[in-house]
Structure formats: C-alpha cells, structure tokens
Amino acid sequence: MIDYLLALGTVTLAWWISTGLVLLLNRLGPQWQRSSLLLVTGLVVLSLVYLPGRSEDRTAAGALLGFGQGLVIWAWLEMTYLMGVITGPRKTACPEGAGTARRFWLGLQTSLYHEVSVIAMVGLVVLLAGDGPNQVAAATCISLWLMRWSAKLNLFLGVRNYNSDWFPAHLQYLDSYTRRASMNLLFPLSVTIGTATAVVLLAQAMATVDPFLRSANLLVSALLSLAVLEHWFLMYPFGESVLWRWALSPASETDQHKPSTAVNDVSGMPLTKHS
Image (tube, rainbow, N blue to C red; front, top):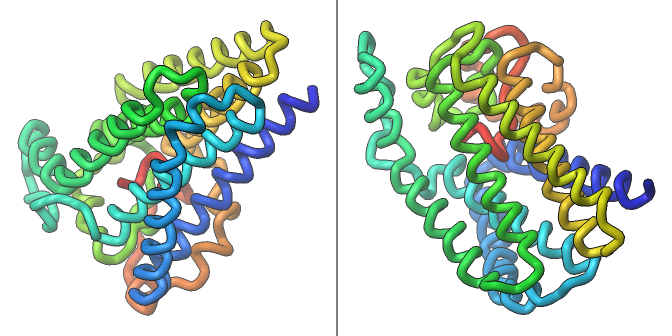
C-alpha cells in the first residue's frame, strides 16, 4: 500500500507544482521567462544526456528518476509554446463564420511548428531510451503527448467549461479556434481509453512483486489518471482553479484588465491542454 500511495502522491505533487510553475512563469516578466526557460533547457539537456544510462536502471528509484526526466522534457515543451518561443506560422484569430474544416486547418497552423517539435522530441526520447528495460521517461512523454492531442481535439469539437483566461495575453487569439458545447462524440472515447489504460497498468502493478515494474506501472497509471481528470475538468465544474490560485494571482496588467471569456469557473491544465 505504501508503494501505491507514494506513486500517487509523487505524481500528484509533480502535476500540481509543475502546472502552477508554468502558469506563474507565464505571468511574470520577460526576464523571468527567459531565465526560467534557460534553466529548464539545461535540465532537458541533462535529462537527454543521461537518458540512455537511465534506461538500463531497473530499480524503483530508476523508474522515479525516469518519470522526472520525462516530466522535465514535457514542461520544457509546454513552456516554449506558452512563452511564444515555438508556436506556428499563424498568430491571429479564426475568421468569423469559418467552417469546421477551415477552422481545423487554421487552428493547426497556430501551433504547427510546436507540434513538429513535440513529435521530434518524443521521437528523440524513444530513440535514446533504446531497448533498455526502463522506459518510464518515454512512457511519460508518450502518455502526455497522446492525452494532449486528445484534449486539443476535444477543445476543437466543443467542451463545456474551458477557460481561456488561463492563456497568456499573447495567445488569447487561440480561444477563437475552440467551441463551447455540452458534449462531443470524442470525449467519452477519450476518457474511456485513458481510464482503461490506467486501470490495466494499475492491475499490472498489483500483479507483480518486482519493485521496478510496480513503480513504473504505478507512476504512468497515476499520470494517465490525472490526465483523464483534466479531461473531466473541461466538461464539468469542479472548482479546481482554486488549486492554482497562487500561480494565477500575479497577473500582468494586461491580464488584469482583459475581459473574462470564461465559461463557468473551470479551465484546463496546461500540461496537457493549453497548447
């Protein structure tokens, strides 16, 4: 039982802190953003350098470190987008009256360069991990990548409680590419597949006595569970924004005077949704 609580607590704490830090940094000045991005870039380089060796580390601690490496890499990808470093060729709002196909194509252009960078980075992580027994870093990045795409497609098709106020001011135009709807056809499939995968990994963790396999499966299962929870946040009001009030409070002057476009009181978590 200690193993399960430790894995859940570790992933939840990492999720809460990393989400809050990304939100906070995007509301601070350019100097803070540049410094933080430079720092995280250094951590990403170290993570990639040590990834081949970590993939051979078949211990519970190795699984945890692999998870940390994957999370650092993903945080860097999110920061480069939210800070406007890597986005796409289109930086304007969707034209009014655009049809579904045109809205999708124009929306893709807003983050095209970033989508390519995500694919390249995830591919690099998989390549560096090779065929080593410790694939937690790769599994972490792949899980976040797939759940991020799922969240973005749900935003495109329509969700109930998305809050654009969590975007930095320079990305507010992205709100025009989303839809407000009580439900869409993809949402049940997204949460079902995500939940089923998390349950399978949890069952595998419970069925093994190997400390490494137990830790690895528990970490990824907990991560997927939180990603599914974030999907639910998009549809139903849970008042979860209070969890990151400390990160949202130092809003810039632009944000403070910007009219709210929130729907109810809910928004998505940037680690899987806001980019």
